[in-house]
Length: 193
Image 1: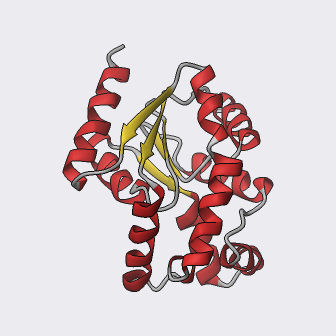
Image 2: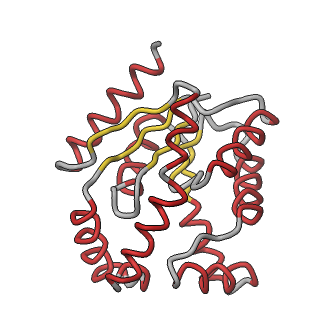
Image 3: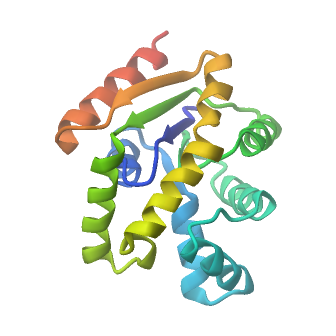
């Protein structure tokens, strides 16, 4: 089973590249952002709570996110693999994900980290905010808070996977196809290693 963590700050292109990787490698896309947005749209208790936190640029509690992922894994037992987009965001989540995957007799094959400079990220997110209607992408202060939260809480997850020999940095700047080709080269190398 090919399980990939696609990593990077908000605006790095994880969603765009995930769609392409899902098609290329026949993976199930597991985006915690999409899962949360569907809960928000449905107006569930979880969705209301998550929306309040997301509107502030804060993270949703681990137990909620892990529970959603466990449901997704259970619903896709026949999958050839998963691409985790926007998760794990903390070392505790990475440890919980490893334990969860172990229960399903699998593990993370690689973490691919899209690297993009902060100014480029802010510009990308503001642009996305104009077209998507997402309030968390329309306000530069909220965006900067999200990037600070990422640097403070999330960037350390790279160290966790690096210690396992599973971390690879990938240049996230260029055309969508150029970045995709870089990601595929890394995945193919890991798959044949």
